[in-house]
Length: 142
Image (cartoon, rainbow, N blue to C red; front, side, top):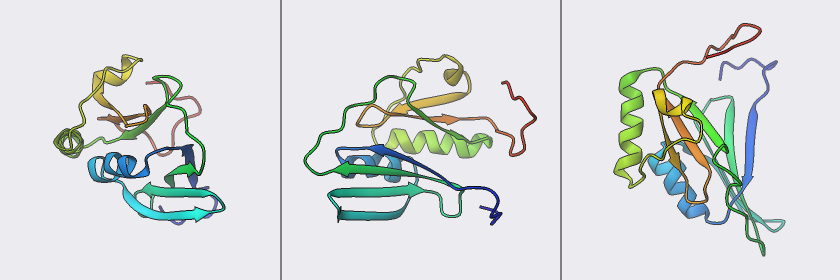
């Protein structure tokens, strides 16, 4: 992240059941770093993943004594824009080398320039071979 204090950091938090399986998916296969973790914190265990210095991170949280539902639908997406074709292909290949296969996207837009992978709990990660402008115009359409 640029260190711009006026830009908030985004944390996407979602319930989880199997933190080890999700670490294999997002960490080992997708290449996210483990930025933090916690065990037994007021009845919760968690894993915080992302890229060091990025303005966002993903928090996966397991609540003791409960079972989290699978993703409610196929539009529960995290999208990573990877404009460099070689970096994008390396990311897709890394997912596949860890045993994850692309799935067909519910919205065909994502299949045109990307690959979608489903995590062990039904949530989806899109690796999109495109750029997203850091300073988009008032309205952005692709």
